[in-house]
Image (cartoon, rainbow, N blue to C red; front, side, top):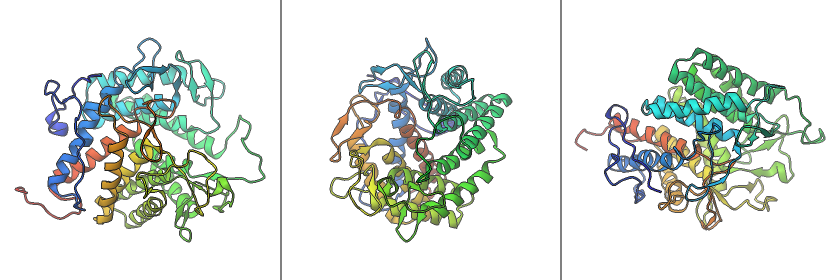
Length: 443
């Protein structure tokens, strides 16, 4: 597959390989040196890995091939070479892909094609992804939009509302700004007061998961930026309080995935199960909020503590990479895929370590960033066919060569590339190192 080139205006992002430059896809992944700082000489090539990887590799893998011109929406179940494996549509991926296109239009360059594809996704969300009986969103559809499954949780709504928000920002649509807010409120309401379905478990051992507060934070951050969501700060503060109070266990040095209603540790397989990648994703949401609030020291401390605890639990010293699951007490884990390496925790850890370094200047985070960046690009990145593999064995061998399914699509990887590009671009534009030490113009 030979992706089309992706040049970007000087106004938005300086230099990018032109379509006829012979640099359609990065042929060599830049590896970080052993220097623990991100000095100007290293910022530029690393920035290029993220920026050019996004524009000249990841995006051309997905677009336009995943755009379903016949039935609407996006076809993301893709084999290694981009060929279609299944034409069913996951609603998470419909919202995520639509958000990505709107985010690119709003933050990188206002390309007409990106907006057209974003509108294409919005129209499919509107037409096919809501159940008219209760207003909730489906999870799994046929290609032409007939419903197959609805989940008990409302994460389809969280991804749809941020897509609506970016589209509203791109078009100036008050209608879609209102819709983004309403779908967000539906997400909140369903998670707090679920109704209309049979519970998965009895009330013998009630639990709650970190997923709702952490995704609430990320969703509010996106909507605060796109539509000025009036409730954003309130819900972010409430969610930060819940995570701090109930899911952070200082005596155990762990971020819990599942706890009792009041934060109780549940000493069973499910209660002891930790997901380092998920917790590290939550950590960078906290750090992003700290940055938004002028490097708030309490939030910097909270986010870096979460990262510290879960990096030490999750990093696989014998083989490298992040384990998918581990046990709170370091006992055997029930899930048999616990030692696999999934793509998305590595995307989240690359962001979290870079952001932690930017906020603290602690060389430990630059070293961790180097480790996870180098390992991920050495094992997940497909230099021949583009994009990343999703699932590896513990030792880094490819488990399955697919690039997309109900869970994997154009979201975690491009979000990581865009976020890290912009973090490094900010550092370069400000003529400072990540540590905040002045750099001369001649450096």
